[in-house]
Image: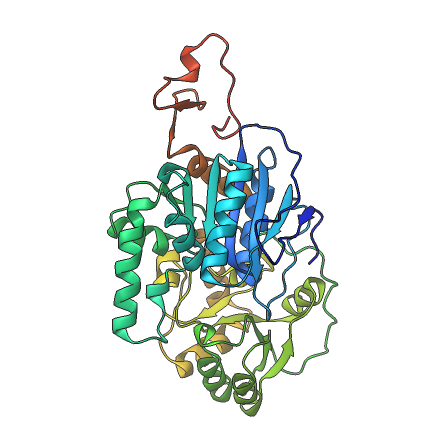
Length: 397
């Protein structure tokens, strides 16, 4: 793992963490996830970078088929590793929480959300939850299973201080479940700047590219059918995962690269004519936002998460997607109009907005914002009413 942080290993026997020599201070955040990798890892890295004045600690286990490095510039104070097993993970979370006593526990993904919200030693108001796509949105499980996921989330919402939703869709779903404190913390679409310039005249056909794990959520079968229907384009999938899905893509003429280093991904994005997104369900796909940052139009499948983002020209079938990708790959008025609508839809996806919303999410819960932007404890009154007040690191401004 390419962390620059102090890395703290958990002993296999448990109850055997090395001593931590840290002082008590405000503004300490503990991030917890059992699914560290891909978009979740990138999002956590962005959150760490967005609030550099806070002390961020990570408690995580990573997915074996995902790249797991944090983005450049994201330097947490320390990293704990989450063991395997339900009981061991709950003990680990309880132990780390007891040792760090963070101001907020920011939990990422559904399982981590369940672990943390079941621990009554963590105050409800201190739990900030980002599902990164609710489990009941999955389309690869029976409807009864999805209903059970919904019931579980509805019950656990009573133990949620704030939902820091990664997308408008996620915010809408949290509100429908009765969560009273919901903040949309957008992912960011940054310009890609570290890629070499594409070589002119290298490609006879425009390049259509996507980035993601080969898994049912990303629906490589939909991508393969679109590729078969769009022979005027070269189709490339950047990512790794299920071998059967890889063979399916390659059988449709798609080049599967496996996981690449970020500069190489950026090089392919710089050479591409269009980005393609075929996921069957989503949170807020960071790879798509990165493609927008590279200046690419997006041919995407019509799913609720992307419709809620306001993405233009969504399509429902592989054939329609292939046709759209072909049109967007050609310079002209249609592509220009699409790019303008895309920029408008993602207007809030900036570092400044993300930082402000994240601080808002952390400031909610047991504390509330004063008129001057400082933070007050509900029991203690506004800091701005006290002569010696200073804005706390969770309060903004």
